[in-house]
Every structure is written in C-alpha cells, then in structure tokens.
Length: 285
Image 1 (cartoon, rainbow, N blue to C red):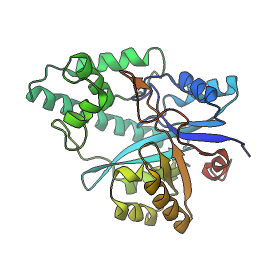
Image 2: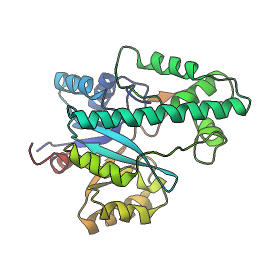
Image 3: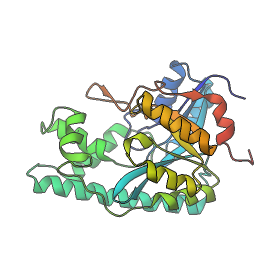
C-alpha cells in the first residue's frame, strides 16, 4: 500500500494546463506527494510521458482523464482513473469528444467576433501549440483557458478570472454549450474501458439531485476535496460518499499558472490519503 498523500486531479499541456506532463510530475514530487493523477480533458495523451517521469524520479502516476459531459444544459465533469488507454473503442470515443470540444471552441470564437472582439481560431491554436511545446503530441485538446489567454494578450481583459466572468463561463457573453456526452453514458464508457469513475467537483454544479442520480447509475466515487470546495461542501459530499459507500477522491485541479494566477489550486493543496489508490485500481491489478 502506498504511504503518503495523493493529488488526484491535475492538468498538463496535453489539454489546458501550462506545464508539460513531466513538469507536473516533478512539481508533485517537489511538493512531497506520493502520487499524482494526470486528468487532462478528454485525452490521455499526457499519461505516457508522466508515467515515465514518475518512474524516473520515484513518484506514482495514476493514469486518468476528465470527461466533458452535459446534463440539462449544464457542464458536468466525470473523472476516470485507470481506464485502459490501449482500448481502441475507448480511444475512438475520446477522439469524438475532442471533435465536439473543437466545435465548441469555434462557436465561442465566432460569438466573440460577433461581440466585436478581433480573434481567430488560428490564434487560439497557436497559443495552445506554443504552450504544449514538444510535449503531449497527438490527441492534445484545446479549451477555454487558451481562449482566455488570447483575450488577455489582446488586452480585451486583464486576468483569467475576468475572461471567464465576462465571456467564457456559464452566463458569460460568449458562453456556448452544444449537445455533448451525457454523464450517465460517460459512466458506462469508463466501466467498459476498465476504469473507475468519480464525479468531479460536485460543489460547482449546485445539483445534488443530479449527484444522487449519478450514484444510482453506478458512479463509483465523489471528488469530496477540491480547490473550489469549502468546508461545508467537503463535509456534505463526505457524508454522501459514506452513505452510499463511494470512494472519496480529491485533488487541486491544478492547471499551472497563467498571468501569475494558479488555476484552480496549487498542486498538492487538496489531497487524499494515497491508500485510496487501492480502491481506484481495477480488480485485475
């Protein structure tokens, strides 16, 4: 059994983080963590590099992913751990999610242009490529933080927070949410790929009725500890997890730094006992 703390929610340049998979793992090691999960949006492209770095410096890397789903018009994210990255059906499904994500990015950019903002998808792609560098390669994803970065560079907004509040978050002037995978279906995809599922940051949704529905559909865990959860949310979801016998996961949702801001929290700022990895691993391991 692993001894120490684990941060089970971190992003890299394979999606919308600003640090390479190897750099995130090195940062986790420097933070004194025993384990870190790489959970990029709709891709596992950074996992291989992260695992190699973990083996080199002596820290466990949990292969993970954060699936983008929509229920009742609201973004719901589902974390998956230890899914079989070599499963062809799983990879085809993830490619489909990335196609939908790309379509959403284009819709956001078009909306911004309609609002009088001089911006193009090519510029967004250039920022994503610049930040990814040589890391991640095939299968990386582009997300709203890349668009926010461009808005800052163009002087449209001053900070990431302003970019999301004014334009990109739910209720923002350029927010769009096309039909996407339903979280119930995501749970099945994860199960079929041999992984373990957990509801990401449920405190952000204000939909505990949906949390209960996800539990009834077979979700295996709840992200009790998250950078955007306060003590009340942590206690509420801890009780729900205990009542239903679910795995309690937690993590910082680290995305690196943009314009001097760390999103959502510093790596290692939200953790769980690394012993939880035994609960997350498939029975075959």
